[in-house]
Image (cartoon, rainbow, N blue to C red):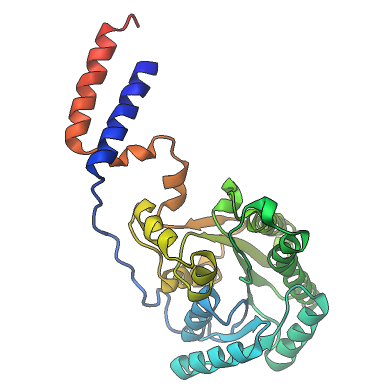
Length: 321
């Protein structure tokens, strides 16, 4: 076995010198709505972090499918601009709500506004997030606390406030949280985010059992990379990580926001009423690419595999085993 591993290492090194052959993308995105146009008629959706990026994409798709959507975040002017843009495109009502998810009182006041205007939400998407890349030892206690407050405590604040109201009203709802696949695996240099997102997953999975009796479903999407302007400027200001990241993903591209929006709308729709307590990783195979011990062998070309096979056969033949 040791000899085989050595041979594999030799072949891998050789392949890296001659260069890896990158296949062209065979997985083009489909960005049109997946569900029928009236799938969310009469439904009210609340999306935190809804002014930009993935939140805006999900808000747009739900609005396009007939939902009344409330988008919540701290920056009201951004929300107002997004709401106007979506309403102009879809013709459905989009309500901007100023909300700092870290502050339970701010959450209460925002949900009060929503309930007064449109009633309690049938759909709650916990999407608000914060993150930055840094070695852990460079972080201050406040930096760690900030990310946990936004991601974990913010999700708990929104879920608890809305959940209590729904229970009192006898109304069910579908909850969806947006996390990341490294919440399960762990990852260096994004430790606060990994900790907070894993907490969100534990919260959501736990409540999927506890609150099912109230007619509530709880699920999670763990996305891979989607090229959103705000996140990529913060996490990859040079663009080098983006360039290298696409090479590692098996489908050789990043996701399109509409693809995630299609998955999200399905998961919070009545078509998915049997889906509860699940995490769906949506990353083009990125998680599997990074977790396979021998995945680096993708660099080995066919002619090298032929040579490698002969070397292994010869080694095994000469082995006492």
